[in-house]
Image (cartoon, rainbow, N blue to C red; front, side, top):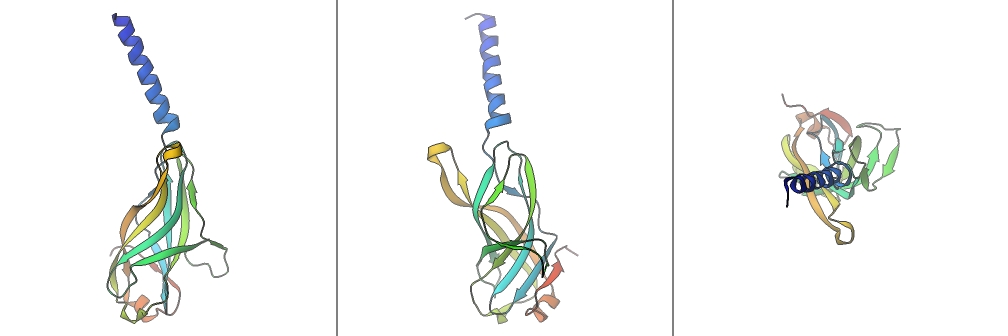
Length: 180
């Protein structure tokens, strides 16, 4: 094997690897940062609307078949299913679509306002303060015939529930989620 053969082989390997990275790398769904605001109500169910920024920096599309919101705080349900997308945090006359799969094309970023509503439960134990939250996605992973689905945590963040939210929990009101 001569020096020119080594250089040609290295160039071929580099070209194939570059093509894969630039054009054929499977997508990876991510959520950028924590929500800046949210809308909240809790009567016999917890109703939480979050603006989530989904991104996929890889070339191929990625799909989340379903989402869920996990809450880690006493007085809250452990998991809230994804039920709808809305035009904004608080849009009483705006469009409300049923939950569908979230598809993010390659090298795309999308803002989606997601509604999470729990099953009926006793909301009287809800207290103000930071509620640890995590958004999970049921995603397709793997190659072609060997694709599998599993739940993946996309982001963890605090929901800063103010005292006013607990006092007026029967009303669906938007709140700021920024740390003081």
